[in-house]
Length: 134
Ligand code: CO
Image: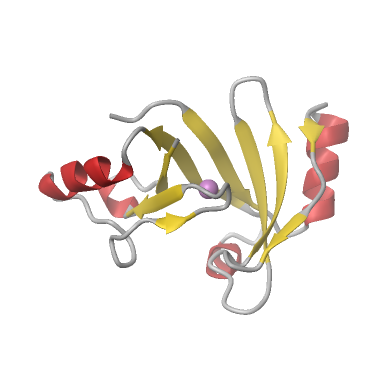
């Protein structure tokens, strides 16, 4: 059901430091920061040959990653995103297996303008999983 790894999202306590690290130390192609008020994050995209890294920093109040950074002050992997062909089929299959979908269970439009869902980390070996329809 899941296809390619679309991205790995890393919450960071300092976006400039993290972007410099990926650009200068790791030698990756690093884009400019972009605010995404609807998702409560500022994002820097790191383009790799086979996937992307998204460096996430809280934007505004009630950012969904603030609690994560409070618990992980040095930052850390926040979620991984797998591509699926049909997000409603994927959701219905997952529900039939007993997996929990976060939120209302209805897909939202994600950071790339495509429908996404998040799966409960306790059902997936402690990892928050995002599914994105491509
Ligand atoms: Co994501």
